[in-house]
Amino acid sequence: MTALLVAAAAVGVSYGWFALDRRKTAARALWKMAPAALMAVAAWMAGAPLLLPAALLFALAGDGFLAFDGQRPFLTGLGSFLACHLCYAALFLSGQDPVWSAGPAFLVGTAAIFAIALGAFRYLRPVLGPMRIPVALYTGVIAAMAVAGLSRGPDLVLICGVMLFMASDLTLGIATFRLAPDSDWRPAFERFVWYSYLASQLLIVVAMGVR
Image (tube, rainbow, N blue to C red):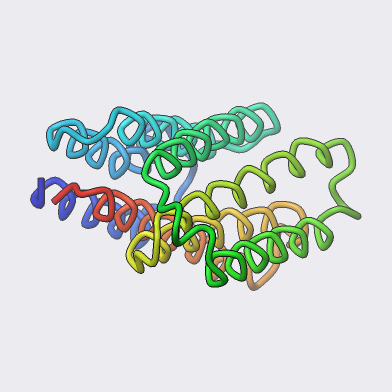
């Protein structure tokens, strides 16, 4: 399993280094999808709960759709990642620590997660237009996934994973709706989105016992 995760990390880093700024082709999309595919295989071979490889396969589909421009690929990718977050939320809640999740640290963390999500949505809302409801739904599901991860207890690997996933998605939203296409900040935003997403998936997989 370790070899597959190392391969996923290496392929993901190489994609960010060599392909992120290239023309959007099918070959580039397959390169982008490869890390999630390798992680899904590792999770399946490790005998992880089926929700873990399912989440990774939905993420793989989302990576493929978001590798192309246009409203339809964007909305389909959004739906794929929505399903990914729902799978993760169900997986995390199945291992909820009832004592921890009734304590003050969990309650403070939950409040902070929803405050971040609400703040990001309020920042995006004036420019969303007809995308307001889909983005509101997606933002709420991201926050719920992060809270579900936190509910398992003070697992720093998992918490870092879910928070990086949340940061990646919220940054993607800002880059998509708020950043000008020719902004000098776009390359930095795109690299942060990709590398934080890659790290988040690897951390979540490791936290779920895949070695």
